[in-house]
View 1: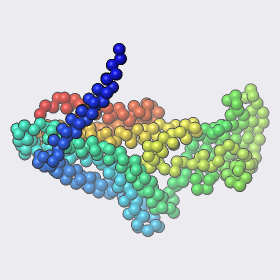
View 2: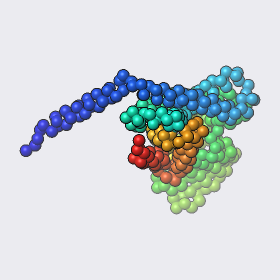
View 3: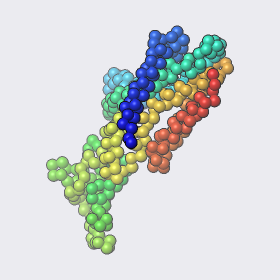
View 4: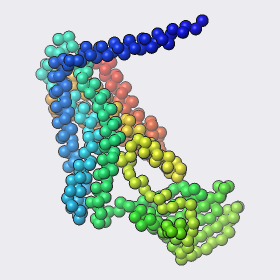
Length: 392
């Protein structure tokens, strides 16, 4: 006989569990205990100071990287200031995890060096309870980073790119060119040397292979350049070689023309480079671009890698908080130097491994999902091992 009370019982158990959890959190953290306020205040001051320092350093790096362009631009100075201002949200996204790692490692290391950690443990407060406010903050920060990256940093990157394009106007920088594009069209394949977005003209070499319904080449066009006529809806090719084939792939005809007009399935927009770079597109826009590239027969590994990285970066805030807390408590001397050294080692190790796998994912060497998530999975296992081995 079927027990009809089970679903109701499970709902009751779930409600009781949520209620007990709420009661536990309220009892432990509301009102905030003195130890929680003390540890978190020390941590948050260090964290905010670290962010300010990183922002300043990264702005200097950004300025030095574009200093040559800034020195020759004819645009007003405020465009340079706006460009630097719009890069700050992206810097904050990058700096969040290293900032957490250094701050928690430094603060806990200082408590350990000053014997304050010993006093806390002697009072009957466990280590993980003492630093729990930092862990809670790192979880909240991970959601903030996800939101910030999606809706603030990436649109801000777009504004920064627009300001940079204004600054570069007239400096000889070729931003509106697409070089050596191999792309699948509706009825064949295009091989072009470079495409000028501004002039809507293919220069340096244009090759088109028309494929029939039997997947056999029907004809090949080779030209020095191709200019689109928007009124006639056709392409004007210059210095053209036209080769036609029979069904058995034997040569049907070979002709040359100084110039000739052709009606091709694709318009200029098909060859344009993406209006925005990967860092300027959010999760859903990257998905749309992946669909477009699939339709064109173009590789899209770097797009999927970037889309997965949007979800991966927030998780890092939690992992480095755990590693940093245990590392700080395990450092006998504590101090800024030891904390900075541990932060550099952990963050550098993370990014080196991540960058290596990301490069493989971008180039199709490994699956993009594996390329992004292998590193945080490895560090998550390391964090779990440290929690298991570290008994305080």
